[in-house]
Length: 253
Image (cartoon, rainbow, N blue to C red; front, side):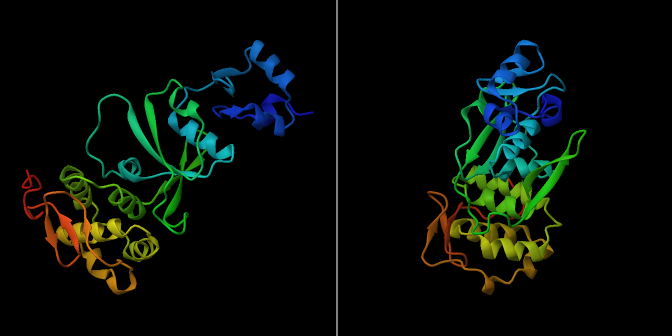
């Protein structure tokens, strides 16, 4: 007979469906709640008393419940040390998931807010994804590698401020892996992201940029307007901020 302690690890969040699949029925769940062996985190979501709840527990638990997701974009870049700005208030964690996530993820009491993106800019949803361990049990969470995360970020750029921020982060990205960059660029579906990434990469001038074979990447056709009131760059066929990103990073303002 299944018991709570045999199916539920410390820190893990679960719902009734998860417990029922493992042999713990509704009556048993109600008993565990009344006896204090289960804590109600949100409506229909539970965990055992134990360590403080973190966002990593939430993401890992969602994966265990069957949601395929990964941490990406700016938050992933922050994990690798490329994000230099800390926002006041709740930190924002960008998650990619093709299916709708339960609403409780943003009403539970943790100092983080999840931004869920359902549109994946890559054909192969697993390319450039890595497992990062956390916590006492070395549970793993899927993160975008820096190479993939930069392209994810480029796909959402709309303003000169966005591009300046991305450029500052890219200045510190001296050790991106050209082989992986080649693969994620080839797999990326966002024409805008690929052109903007190449344009910024050239302006930063790290050695890995010269090892990218542009002939093996589909950059699409036609013009793309990245920002309004910008200037057209004929090499990459995009409209970019008026001032070139050379020298002082604040020169566009």
